[in-house]
Image 1 (cartoon, rainbow, N blue to C red):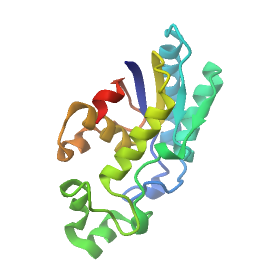
Image 2 (cartoon, rainbow, N blue to C red; image 1 turned 90 degrees about the vertical axis):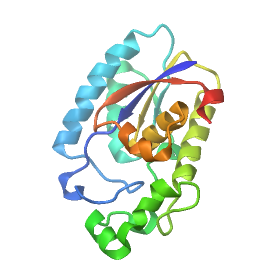
Image 3 (cartoon, helix red, strand yellow; image 1 turned 30 degrees about the horizontal axis):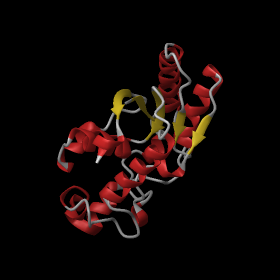
Length: 194
């Protein structure tokens, strides 16, 4: 069993509020940078309390790299940046406002929850494809079973991992999305994640 601390990136620049962004590489606003600094300082203390080396994993997008970079400076750890830990690819919806998407498609976006294995935004990925991508990446990085690890990531993937581990139905996953800059402990055991 590996004790993972999942940390969600800070808030993106306010210009993108109300917009769909998944694997679009957006920067943080001043509030998001402050959230990241707060999270990095708190998690650095947790890392120092661990008996063994702690792998530091992160999505490779700017909003997660910022927090991972702060952790590198504070702790001396080196982050492993992995594109497989990115947020869902929303395809043609990337950077569009949610209002515009709703105006174009009505309630089609409900397919992400109602049909997680088969429905995707145009050119994007299904809910289960996103989940499986992230689970495979974590399996690969944690195959040596470290006692503890830190993962800087995104709301959707964190919720998918937590929901899968808990056996929660997909409609409950949105409730498992942490707030921006929030960190959550998670017991990782690949045999129980699927």
